[in-house]
Image (cartoon, rainbow, N blue to C red; front, top):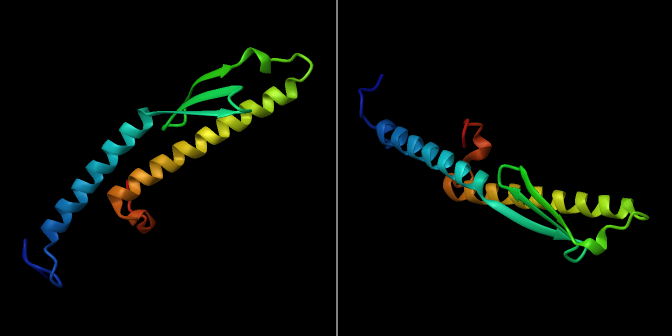
Length: 114
């Protein structure tokens, strides 16, 4: 049994706990900031523009008038789907990048919030 503050294997458990708590606060802050950030992507050479948050909420879809062809609704649907999917991918990559910067790749440890 160890006394409070005593080192275990060269590591002070109190310092380790403080570091983990700080990391968890940093993770929560970055998550909140990134969820509010807006990512804009386009498809079809700019014919379709989608703005999506880091929290994966679509903010807007903008269509150039020339892409709206009543005879080719399938193409328009494909362009919108492509733009939304790209936005989701970029938002997920942004969150992963920012989290890795804080956690140093500790997410694989199964620790909630890391």
